[in-house]
Image (cartoon, rainbow over all chains, first blue to last red; front, side, top):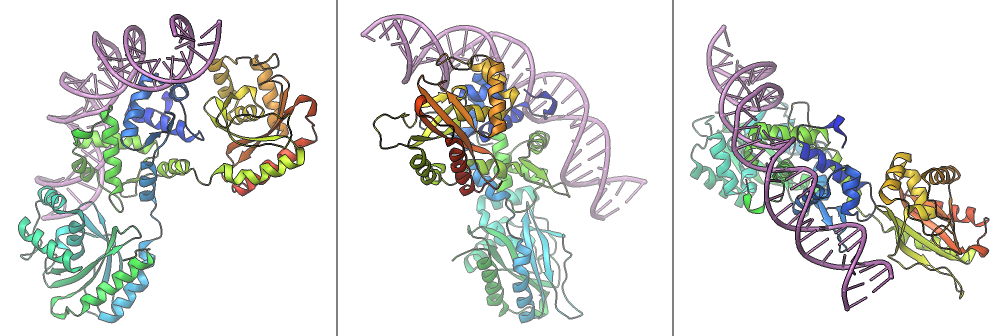
Length: 252
Length: 252
DNA sequence: GATTACGTTTCATAATGTGAAACATGAACG
DNA sequence: CGTTCATGTTTCACATTATGAAACGTAATC
């Protein structure tokens, strides 16, 4: 096989060659052809293909010929960044900012953290402000708790074990039971609160943004000094999140 | 890791788990998270990801976070059968049949053979007729020779070595040099002939059908008893192939 | 400057993937 | 209908690869 472009794992090279060989064909392809095209022994090609079939990367038609499989479509759908969530969100964020007079943030989940990707701020001197690109652990942010709710209790326990739920303030959930309870209640009511859990003096109200598939793709939140935060804003945050989701194709 | 659904090749299982973990995230994902999520040792995950990066299945953003890569989109595009070439081709095949009064075939390449996937026949008692689903080796068909031309001389030599160019009639190319010469000439002029190479008494004129990417996705040919075949039909076959290609998005 | 965390590389070795050979199955042929 | 052939599938001894512990590199944090 083409050794001059081998990578650290030979099996991955072989797999890639097989998938590329399949991609070059219209319709099904025989084992014999794939082995010949990739220079692999037929029994080797057979086993690699069997594994790929099991994971959906390859399929066999009714005559036993090999084809590229459906899981590639599923993964490719995830590759698509699609339309920029920020651009879609920004008008609604500005509307929400004008309604409440406080900072509005858009975040996306990256691993164990929410990352601030967009922000609109009010024209007032004392305001909460996060730097674009900065991050916060899931469990200390309103929308991060909602993301954990999306992932489920088991994944949340894994998260807690992995991160050990570091405390940012005295109000941060350090106990998995309390965290799960907060998450459950927040998920049920469709919004979450950050009661000085990330930073003393700062409170947030957050809701999830969903795409056409229903997946939670971003978090929308209002951040304000605690003494200025108003629960009346909840419906406004939810309305803005609903509008953004609608623009992304989400249909309730 | 999840041993109860392991497949014949452990590395493929591990790779699939990593790709699925990436698919579950919005935005980039850290090595640490991926290793934890899949239960792999970080150095193992690192090497598998390095191989996937080299093949385009994974990419890294400017901060080093891992993302699903562009090659998945490329492969997914191939998964898509897209619109049925047969349905698109049929009206033009009927037009061509009406022009020339002989059988018109549509074939697709499957490995070392052309497979007959659509056929329209004239209303005459003596006519050439291939069964849908039947196959013929590339080198004995007009459009098969054009497909070999698309693949190049090296691939054609590999094909010749693999199949040993079995003779179907005395007119079949049994010599690689003669075959390459015929292929070169055919490719240059944009159509190919089958001069009783597949079956005595039968002659064909064929041209390639291309899709939006320019790839040859099918072959279109007129088959007739040799004494009825007319070289005037060449431009009609090319015109029909051009029209079908246009419907598939091909722009010359 | 010291410490920490994450990513990357090294290297001995255990475990996996390999491929030759055997077997299974179906199609083709006489 | 029996034989032959081709392709696909399975087995198994073992060579080679992939692994993971440990070390190293780098950048961020305190």
